[in-house]
Image (cartoon, rainbow, N blue to C red; front, side):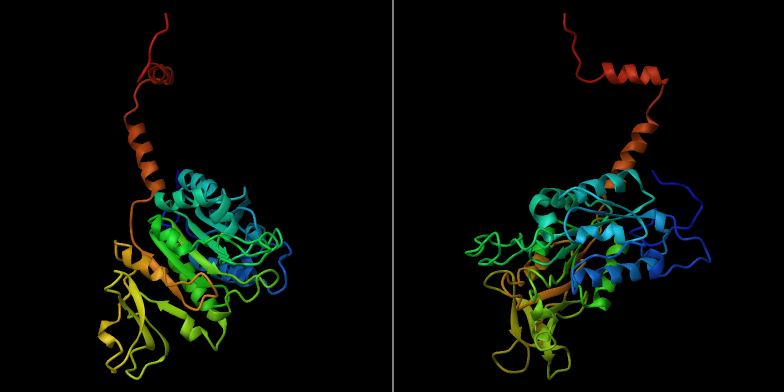
Length: 372
């Protein structure tokens, strides 16, 4: 239950969490532990860690009211490097442990750090149920499309045909699209960002933290040792304008080099009448081009996730020639932990009698029978 400390509360996603005392300030250094950060040189995890450490002071929360739960994998070392509470937990089970914490401790801001193997293989079942329940926690999924900690086996997001130590003749599996999976589980906040884009990463983290309910953020994260260059298409200055499809609520979905009309890139998304989904088209005045007014306007707040799901399917399972980046969905729905606390309050309000009387009623009530 929430601790009443007489302190102001901040942000919608942490509205039950005590705020930092008035007049006190924090910096990224305050959220950096004394542990040596040990990832491979060039690992994208360094960039994400720095972004998170720099962002956490903006929450305006006390460090002891923030907790990071991780599973198993390279990304799961995160709790050691943050000066908050945390737990390096069980392979794939971080969402389950985080659910228990968020439900029992309303006064905590709960975060999950996981990887594509940890979350989508052994932990797949736990992930989808946390998403559908809409527990008030933020899940950061680091997707490097490989098993890094165990030295380079293919993962649930590796492309078909991937040559690895465990698939010497090429992977036969069709990969998961994490964003599509989250939308299919009806998550209320779904986003994708990139480890090396500090500004975009921070803005997505901010929106995720403000959200009341489960926030799911996929982070494209490069593994320079076992899967280097997996995201070159969305990172290289030469290709990123054509590869990244930026999603901004309320704005037309256009990308590529600036168009002649000044309204965005030369390409955009429109409805596909043949499939009911969306498709990429050229935008312009030519007869074979789509008109600017026909370009789809992104609506992250739509209660119907059909269009968001269709946009997520534009991500190819190969070398990521195109990838929508941004917030796909951001809607409001009652959270599991809030509803559970309400039930406890209602049940407690109707309880009368002494402890022994209540115990006898519990044992003897409901479906009982007597064995002669």
